[in-house]
Every structure is written in C-alpha cells, then in structure tokens.
Length: 130
Image (cartoon, rainbow, N blue to C red; front, side, top):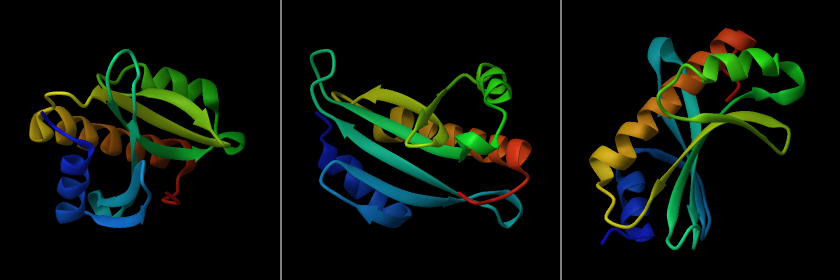
C-alpha cells in the first residue's frame, strides 16, 4: 500500500522542494525554454472512503486572466480541471493514494498537469510568474 510518506520521499529525491508541511508539498519543475512551473501536492485524508493526492499547478491570478478562456482550454486536456483557490487560477487533478503506482499514477499526471498549466500560463498571461 502506498503512503503519503512514499509520495513525499519520491518528490524530495527528484524535485526542488520550496515548501513542506504536514499535509502538502510545494515544489518546482523545469519546463521548456528556461521556464519553470510550481506545483503543489496535497494529502487529502478520508475523501470517499480513502486518502487521495491532489496535484495542483497555478496558471495565473484569477483577476488578471480570462477565466472563460481558461475553462475552455482546460476542457481539452485529458488530466486536470480548472479551479480558483485564494485568488489563483489553477489546474488540479486528484488520484487515490491506496495502491498508487507512483511512477504511472502519480508522476505521469503530475507532469501532464504541470506542462498544461505552464502552457496555459504562457498563453493567458504571456509570463512565467508561477
């Protein structure tokens, strides 16, 4: 059975961790053309009879981007849905923790969400703030 500690250790050995608390990690991934993208992984305990991992990556400040465009663009992605949390527009994706294959069911969606969020950030803001 995969644990939250397994996910933490996987992230710490592969990525630059920016912030670490009991229930979440914020870290940075390298992208194309020198761009970087932040991502947060949350441990969501006891959601629908089990623990989950939520992957989220910012796209831009909600009051500075066209949210309708974000929703339309996010709708064409196989992973991630658009949301606004604390004034930040982001893409997020959730996977069950129990019996999680870290390489296939965590890292693949992680990289897909981050790449899509970075692409949307570039497209909607023409910047690399996050």
